[in-house]
Length: 325
Image (cartoon, rainbow, N blue to C red; front, side, top):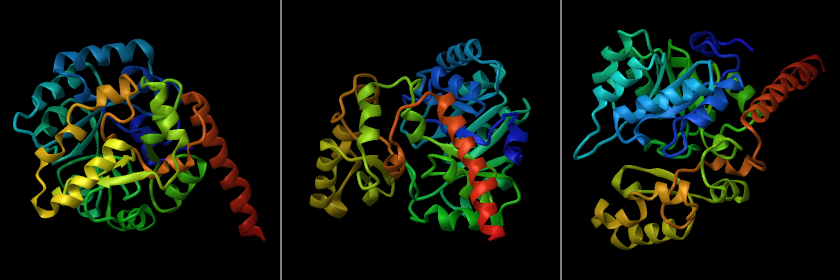
């Protein structure tokens, strides 16, 4: 299956593994790339630019296929040394970067001068248009269904993707709610050139997270996520657990007086305890509504092969049969 995204990134299948905190290590990125998709290392999970350089080298030892690095630009009192991270990417010979969060424009010259392709994750058409204006090569359009930060507009992909297709000149992939061949065909039908999966790739054999995390995703339904930090306009979709319910109780109790400091115990520094140690009530962690479609823990190769086979059957058989009826 050839699309603008497979051609741009030099990959076999139009499937991207999104950057995920304490998930996007070399093991997962290499497994996705070896299976014909585009694996992504999460840059800021690495504590320094030199650590990122080492992770890139590890990934290169595991695959000779293209892979990328995610750089997420977050508000912080002491921001990461983004230029140093960008330089580590350049020095490591990586040719694809997924940016997310705030405007990535300050580091674009470092990356673009090295011939790196940039795909920016956006939760609205206006943000995707801004990414296009500043020189990003592609966009990852993130619908309201997604795990992590869906923005504040609450527009689901059935509306957001066709709107993006109407407005954008650069190619884009669908993100949020993606799990299988049906997701891929629907995304292509609405104008996307592929899809980005996050939560689905956590529940794979190669994902370097605790088995408790994978089991929680498989056990969850589409009704088991919650939106937190809405009063702070930093909305995040997470899987429900005891910590999340405590956080939501604080939000209800404090109302407009809620400060970020009030919820620090539920959100600060919890990812290592969850993803590495398997403490499922340690705090809030990103998870999409797509958990309701995730019923097993395959290898990345099995998952991607299954998605492509299902997509081809839908296109060649079901849709053809309907058209010829």
